[in-house]
Length: 624
Image (cartoon, rainbow, N blue to C red; front, side):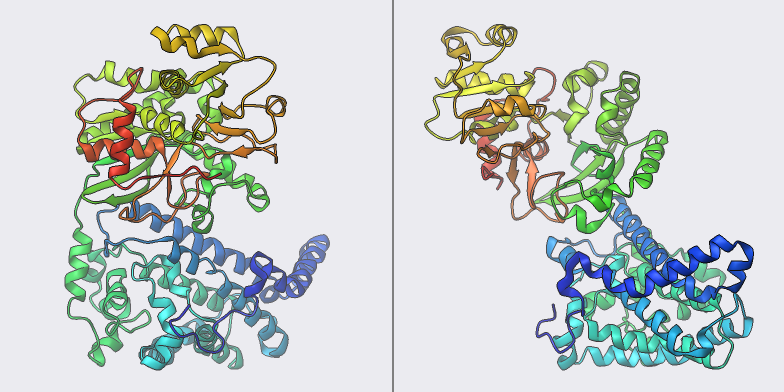
């Protein structure tokens, strides 16, 4: 919101939330009905249809797709690009503020449906008219750009700025969709302004579908491009056609408007800033430096992968609003399974990890890389070699770049895949980076999640490295660890020596109130737990919650330090500003400068890494 919100700040359908799309049904349903009838009649049916009318709804969907493509490309580039313009943090507040970017597309739909109904000359438009296209170009260069320049300057007057335009400028580090984040009143003014070419060509009889759709695409393209936080306009473009410098702005040109506020007011064509001497003097210098860029190798890399097919939309590169919330399957995401399936096919052929996120903590520069494989693929025997090759390639690439620590997340450290990362050390004993599986910190988080005064716990599930380490630590503390299968008991006793082993035993018919579980604990097993049982997972994946009378804990995770920058997406199913223990362990490892690897069967000193994590600002989170 603006600092002092004025009238018409809220969108009319704001209180409807995700149900806001129903406001378009009175127009969309008849349009779809017209298309269905035309399709049934065949070629003759389409000849009778007003194409300008039926194309409105598809055009709105294409606008959404166009904007989403820009969001994904921009986030991909800002995670890895050396051409950043403003190297500052984006937070959850900005993501929430920019969540309603599609409101202006709904508003656009209203304009066109109402205009088509009320203006007779807007019906039965031809596909193309050269004179109308030329008129649209000239009207944009003249009245639209001129009026926008002075309206924009007026918006920076204290009265209007505090009531409206400050909402847009709250985003100093811009993303493509920042371009359309304005109060409702501003959008009314913008649509009146942009309607000048539409209405002029319609009333003069020179309008065409190509001119109208092309103008909208141009506005969206320039808006999105100008609000990217990386420079992408090549220098040769201005060298080949020098006047273009006055006819097309660049991301760095407009970025100065968001950092300096009182310069570079132009819409898309900077010549009015040149004419009225409001061009920022550092525009050319920032363009040159942003285009040149600087390579910056990360200190820490966390290597993860998508989980389910739908999780591709939850990645920071996917839908920003979904990524800013804990991951859960949504019905409207499930209906997009064809796109998810296509992403899986593309991932299958992609031969390298890709950068998902970049963060910073104190002096440490961090990135998250993702292996282009999904959960189910890690369980396929014929995929094992390919996955190992991808992980190995990522490790060698990181080592070459000078990365200090690489933490292996999710199934990238599975024993069945690579023995917890140990095979890479055996193959490359001279690696300079340290491989961390995070099991020690995960164990520490579990131990500190168990309610005080607990004397018995049930260990239920596959005995992973974390499960072994947790059981050993509990036995040493005098806590009895119960198991349900004799082979599991024998396996643990072979690893726990001395008097501590006496605290291991098979469970009786009664069960304790604290269960340490993995994600594959089925419904039948959960029903055996007494009422009020604490289910504490030791796996990287959360178990299915099926008991309302029991308490479910999060997978081992910690609250991140306040100083950790650029966190505006959730790590899988974890809440905001929470980080899995496996990922946090890599950061702590680098901050401490430890020389040891933590992979294979190696377990670091649990109390030592727990104390180090707390010292660096990571906090325990035991809420359910």
